[in-house]
Amino acid sequence: MLSKKQKYMTNIGQKNMLNRKELQEMSVAIIMTVFNRLEKTKKCINDLEVALKDVPHKYFITNDGSSDGTDKYLKKIKKTISVDIYDGDGSLFWNKGMYFSYEKAIKENYTYYLWVNNDTEFYPDAWNTLLSDYEMAKKINSFSVICGAVQSAITGEITYGGTKAGVLICPRGSIEECTHINGNCLLIPEIVAQKIGNLDFRYEHGLGDFDYGQRILKECGKLYVSSKFVGTCEKNPIEGTWKDKKLSVKKRIQLMKSKTGQPRTSYKIYLKKWNKKNWLFYYYKPYFDIIFDDIKKHFNQNGD
Image (cartoon, rainbow, N blue to C red):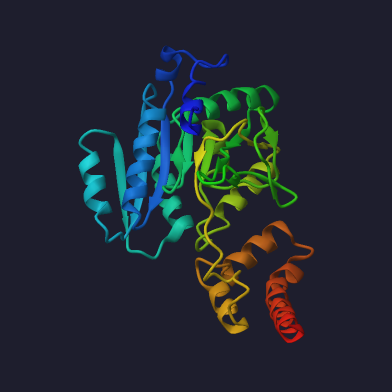
């Protein structure tokens, strides 16, 4: 019985595939930011090298103060593949790290820009899927992006991708419109990159990808989810985060305010930008949700 990866390898010859000459005439800028995930970074880049083997490409990577040997690895691979490296001090997190990488890339003329999270493992035909999906999207609206859906390698369930009404859209064999995009894997054509520009630097960690999608929609563009999974990525665990209902109210609020939680400044910027009428309600809603969870927890404990 074929593994999931082997099944994806058999799809290389799909109908809408561009030939090798056409692939070589385009160029791809890969946008990444990394911090202390050396083995994941290696795997991600190795996978991308397979997926993009026939396509001219260059990596734009922000190394945000890694201390696990990532810097040495990136310097080493510069000898064999095209890489530009920006060194951060550990304070950039995802949004600002991606901002610096993307800033350098969009100054150069690339046919496509590919946002990538380094904890994503890509299938060998990931690029072909994204490209053929954009070719399909372009027939409807060339001002479109493709959000690559990824799944758990353990359960096979979708973990990241595009959402509609707050629900992840599972690939069904053809592209589907979504309302919000995730930055784990995002294909951006040059026409969109030049018009929309860079991420909003004000976001501390998350929300930059959501914001980018809303800016595309504002310009009458389209957001699409890929026709099939492009790789695997495990969902971040809830345990120990502000969403962990086992923690105290005080601890959850503390974690929510942290950069990797739902920092108040970033959240306020996003809400006032895209939900002007109800931003105050949604700004305070997480506080009430946390308190309500705690009341319900104590009620259940006393009931037992």
